[in-house]
Amino acid sequence: MISTTKIVISFSMLLAILFALQVKDGESVDSFFDRPTVTVFIDNNISDFQLGVNCEDSHNKIGFRSLKFGETYSFMLKPNFAETTLYHCRFIWGTVSHHFDIYIQHRDRDDCKHECHWKINKSGPCKEKTDSEECFPWNPNLVKRIMLLMCNWINIFSIKIYVS
Ligand SMILES: *[C@@H]1O[C@H](CO)[C@@H](O)[C@H](O)[C@H]1NC(C)=O
Ligand SMILES: *[C@@H]1O[C@H](CO)[C@@H](O)[C@H](O)[C@H]1NC(C)=O
Image (cartoon, rainbow, N blue to C red):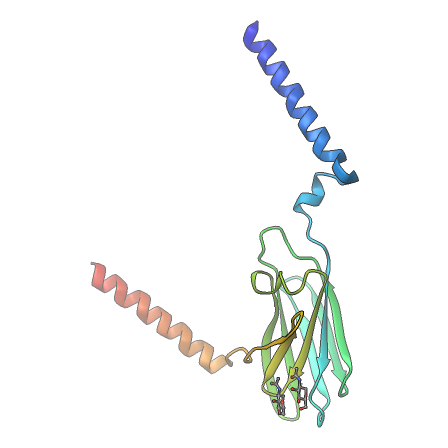
């Protein structure tokens, strides 16, 4: 009997706590898991070329747009609770083509609480911060990536040989 009473009391307390969480600040428990929507702005800062931009994540294709100097490509994203949101873009001008990860949640979450502002330069994208900007190199191209991957395999392989 006592244990049943205990369970009932614990259960009521749990309900009370959940209810308190639910009504706190008029927000629901869901908002704890919810991240605010982020709008990403990508400006063409290359003065002598139109800049082709095409962004996507693994589920959504944002689509291709061609930007004149000073024009902006923008889209909204919803960061996830697991902090793994990743958006990737392709940039083309003249005969040049580059790739860049425009939103990496763990890299950008603090600079991009609601908005993320990027300026695209020939040398790479620059992210606007509160009082400064941070410039990044382009993602390595396919050949470099394959080389890196092969180096990693060789590393893993040699570690295995070393251990056994
Ligand atoms: C934008 O372009 C101008 C002119 O080339 C350059 O001086 C400036 O540093 C660029 N800004 C960024 C953020 O790349
Ligand atoms: C952007 O590119 C211009 C010209 O290519 C260069 O003079 C300038 O330093 C670059 N700015 C940044 C912030 O990378």
